Amino acid sequence: MTAHTASRGAERDARAINARHGDIAPSEIAIGVIIGRTSEFFDFFVYAIASVLVFPALVFPYVDRLTGTMYSFAIFALAFVARPIGSLVFLWIDETLGRGTKLTIALFLLGISTVAVAFLPGYETIGAWSAILLALFRIGQGMALGGQWDGLASLLALNAPENKRGWYAMIPQLGAPLGLIVASGLFAFFVSSLSTADFLDWGWRYPFFVAFAINVVALFARLRMVTTPDYTALFESKELEPSRVTDTLRSDWRNIVIGAFAPLASFALFHMVTVFPLSWVVLFTKEDASRFLGIEIIGGIVGTFAVIASGLIADCVGRRFLLGASAAGIAVFSGFAPQLLNGGDLGEVVFMVTGFILLGLAFGQSSGAVAANFASAQRYTGAALTSDLAWLVGAGFAPLVALVLASKFGLLAAGAYLLSGALGTLIALGVNKELGKRMS
Image (cartoon, rainbow, N blue to C red; front, side, top):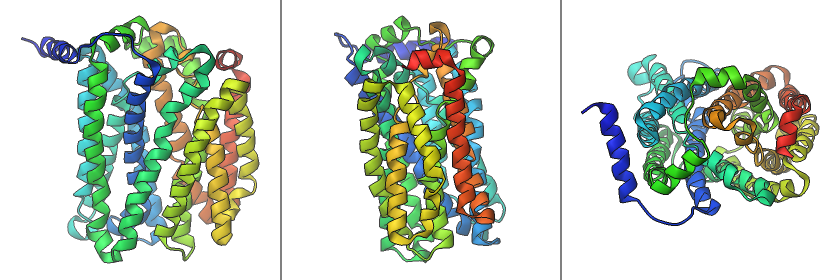
């Protein structure tokens, strides 16, 4: 028996075990989407917070704290570089061995790469190998993130009622603020309850163990959905099956590029109100990190409600209009808001709350056009490649670039970087009239 035959047989067995009858409601798809995205973003924020609070001291103690944080952010970006490579590898696995096999391998790789960080020895123990291992684990996370694309978000968008497309488009985006709230809460607890020595020795490792546990739960929850007969039939009827990457790039390269640049404003703001401000406060103010993590939790709660509001607003005024209006708001925000981080308690709260309101409105609809922007035969692969490119261009190097600019030229320079993202979104929405018609 070949591996291909065995894998297909295993998928058929899983479908038989989970077989049930009846139509699949969009609300049921939404559950799987929220589970998957929350686990993904929790992993993301656990690593991001550790890049500020842990790795500069643990992995790069031989340089000053600012340089160490920049090195950490450079390794942080490796996942976004590896993500498209992971998509290519796992799309082949999807096409050859099946979606269930692909998702299982991808999520196990993500879990193993994440929990491996929890056992990372510091520079004082293994020298430069500490940074090398961290980089390898981060690449493993990126490969897995590219591979865990299960098509549920596209399926949700395609099955949304005609008059509620904006509402269902925002559901996958809820994973970001929810993941931030939990990750910030965990780190805030350990930072506030442990001494600095204990936190750097063992306390910081526990959130990575929690991330591994959440990945296991997410794996079984999502596998139970995507391997059932009803879901398999729905994927096939919507033609959400992998296509050849070369064919998709040849026929839809323009949609992939425009689709990646359309959410640039929200992706740039994403890091400007999550990862970057934490690094600035830790490096350039005397405030306690746990206190600012508390502010981030408040921001995450505000962001959750803003994401929900984006669905209601988009169904009234159109997703394209909301994306354009929020990008214009982000452009205005970039002109003054970053400087509020030097404004003490009040300035920080105003920056975070205002930023998360804008982020929720923009990010809540940033994935709304991905599925609809492709011909049905290329939709599954095209949506995956677009998502990877959007995160690489809009988010991968954002913390590093923002910190370098702000440390050398002041917070106003970080605002200029955010402005470039807003302009990128406005240009993309203006150039692609076809995209605009499909989003409205």
